[in-house]
Length: 241
Length: 373
Image (tube, rainbow over all chains, first blue to last red; front, side, top):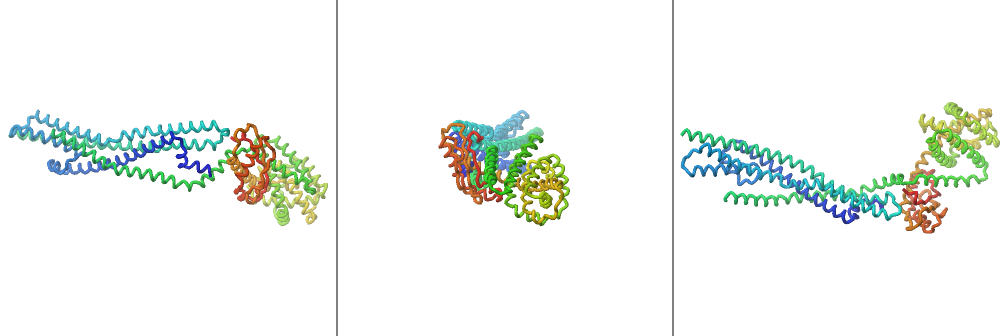
């Protein structure tokens, strides 16, 4: 019975030396943090994908861009954010051009600089979106790469301790070493336990956010094309007049 | 300016919303970890039986086989001694035949390869165990033999096999036969033995496969003498009723062999069972005693103590543990005896077959710290 008691996981954890206990604590915190981030990222990623799908459907439904801008209530994230940033800059520049003279057809040079400004505004919004999507992923990456080493450190420390006590014992049976080694190995197990979900989640979220950002960028290009076309058409029409 | 302030607002809003968004993930993560810990805690008691079974395997790994064998051999020889001193004719005869058996075993071992010799040694010990069992069942076996007489024709095939083996050992067999003949008429013995051989053949057909039989028959030479002894006992009992089946003295020695092989095969089957059981039981006892042995600190190396342990065969309770040979260090001796007493009720003994239980009535444990790996 003594052997079984000493080999239970709870007993192994409570009997561990101080350093090993600290290592286990660190690993437990790592595991908690990584799972918090995994859940948080999973939720926000799924919502971002859903929002983007909804916004894209709305955008291509033939709705007037002014209406679309009005029905988006100060969007702060996703493709709607990119759209609003671009559209706001476009409107502001057009108003300034229009405000200076009554009906001045924007010259091709003015139109080009205006579109450049719009593009820049959208690029800023895009990079902000990118930062938002990959926000906590570096933490996941460092947890996934460091926690096996931390666990290994605990194991090495525990085994060192076991050998030190072994040198005092006259009779070195497997039974005297086994609990120590099992206790030390718990640290490695915990390190792997923290690392494996973090690695998987990091890879998954990285690829998902890359895919989403590429989709945003495509949308920005298309929106830019639409604005460009409208500017060119208007300048051509005003040139006719 | 306007644009910058609106950006700041956005930033603040997003930070706020992100902090709000962290509440659910934190709860989920904490729940996940709590669930995992709970799963570990709950699964723990149900996994204890597995641990118990694995600890028996553990014992066979750790156990010091050589010491176990020594103990068994010691025990065997000591059990054999009082039997020899008994004034019965049968026993005197058996003693002589055991010597002949030992001779035969030695010569056989020389002839065969080294690995076979090892196996034989193990089987010899098994046969010794079977001897005791057979003695206990002797009456019953004799009755069975009488009932089954003249039923099977396989005895003839058995004889053919026996003759092959007989040529190798004819001289020794002759000596054994002469001893028997000194007491009994050769004809009577032949008749009795034939009946026994037929019984053995029947049992063999039922119990063992053909391949195993052949291998056993060839290997059996070492144990042959032991089986002969049993046959001689049977012969003595059935002498009176089977006189009519007298045959020539030359034929008698041949059928003697056949009978010997037959009953020896039976004894192998029994001996294997009880030997396996007693071996694992020995390991369990050894492991339990090792676990509860607290060696006194500071005792000089090289101490060896042997303790004679007597158990109740049915329950495995300790009757007595006495020092058989002292190590010269009183505290070491006491620690050995205390280890046995602490490990004491060996409940597993009650699960053994009764024949194997008898072996644990009294046995010797050797305490040798250097032996423990």
